[in-house]
Length: 439
Image: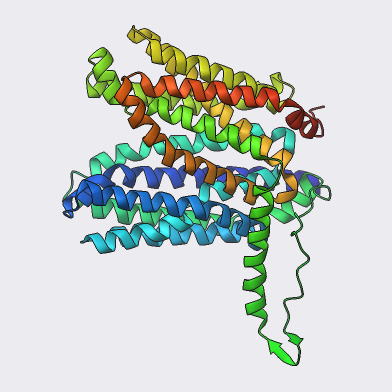
């Protein structure tokens, strides 16, 4: 009976985290499409808007690893609440922005603390057995994607009202506060995990160096404040954990993630413009095509579990096959002369990219389990942020060559990542052989 109760609580916690992911992207997707419109209304030039956007990206780049590592040390549910509330403050301040200065200030807390999805994934990975991790991650991604699809629809209605942007910002902030409350009332992961999944085998990840007692300590006759030691030791531990991963043998995994991220971004970059130039497609039709692709991504999230079972939970094999399919789809899209070929390639690309993203996270968590799930997912997000910075530059250069240049370059990068996976196969398989299989 006790085990059954723990299982029910574990499933309840998973469902709560799915709701957190849905509300997170639902709120974000309401406000993000309106940012350029709002900053333009404040009198900012395109260059100023671009600089502010770049600063946000840089903050995300450096804070992802730090916040992920901190969640391993301070506790994921506690750090998740802090990140959500700080983001709520940023979006609320955005609703008060009547000039460029306030707008810029509002983007700072969001740039630093908007890592709620990453920490939620890390919390999920600690909750479930390794063999079930791709399935649970896929469902979480699907729930989040539904929020991302519905958010712009709601924002479209709100923006037509007087003061629509400010109303949308305050609503987004309220959704994040509601999300923080949801995390607060969730049962604690440690109590569930120990009963449900034999977590005596899933020990808390040790810090790289033993931490001293945080009680007041005497050093050379000087009593030092315990809270000062807590903060200092956490900073030192975060630095050691992040540098430990950066200097580890996982470079090939993160390089594969970077190359595949850039490849997919290049495929989707300037999509509307490319469709207009290549097929004289109207923006409305392009919007329908993007919505169709996003809907398939949601479906792919729910299918990852059955597909993973079909592959006997071999994330490496599934990642290899999905990457090959991604390469074929991007290449087919880049050379397509018929519209139906574009639709076909985007259909399979929606499945392959979602499956690939889930598999690469699962491999990171399995190979580098000693570093902690929060640290690994945070660093993975930093790698993706590097891709978001590099991809527009590559896209612009390739666009000078041809409208098909960005996806052709993306196909080349995808092929390079497949080659790296093949050459480093022993690195993947040796670590993944220890992963539990289904019985």
